[in-house]
Image 1 (cartoon, rainbow, N blue to C red):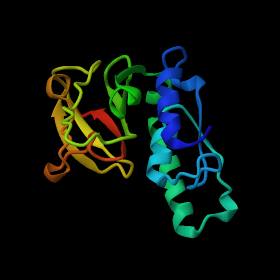
Image 2 (image 1 turned 60 degrees about the vertical axis):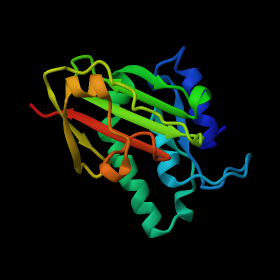
Image 3 (image 1 turned 180 degrees about the vertical axis):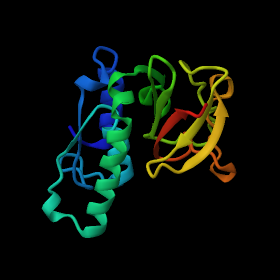
Image 4 (image 1 turned 90 degrees about the vertical axis):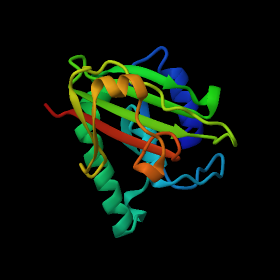
Length: 189
C-alpha cells in the first residue's frame, strides 16, 4: 500500500518492531490506484522520507517542473538519510490516536535530528500543543532547516525539549497545523 495517508498509520505500527532503515517507503503517483485518493507531492515525500526512500512513479511521465521538485526532494533526503536511518527514533504522536503522526530521529550525539509531522485528520476545535522533542543537547543551539536548506529559526535544545517546535503558521511556526512537514535540525555551535 503506497497511499500516503494509509502509510503514515502503517509506518507508526511498523516502527514499533523495525528500524526506519528496514522500511521501504515509495513515492508513487498523485492519485493512488487502490484508494483513489489524491495526495500532494510534499505529503507523499514527507511520508516516504521516514524510511528507505524509493520512487515508484514513472519519471518519464513527469513534466520538467515536477521532475525538478522530485530532484530537490531526493537531494534533501540524501542529506537527512543518515539521521533517519541511523538515528534514534522517537514517536512523539501517533496518527491513530489523534490524527497526526510525528516522528523525531536524533543522532546519538545529538548533533542532528529530523522532525517529521504528517496530519491525517484535523480534529475541529481540538488544540494540539506541540510535542516536546527529546534526545537533543539542552545547552546546544539548533538551526531548523527546510528542504532548501533555508534556516527557518534557531532554538536552544532545552527550549525544544520543554516547549517543542511552534505550530502557529501565522507566527512562523511549522509544526502540526500543516498537512505534512519534514525539518532538519542541525546543531549550530
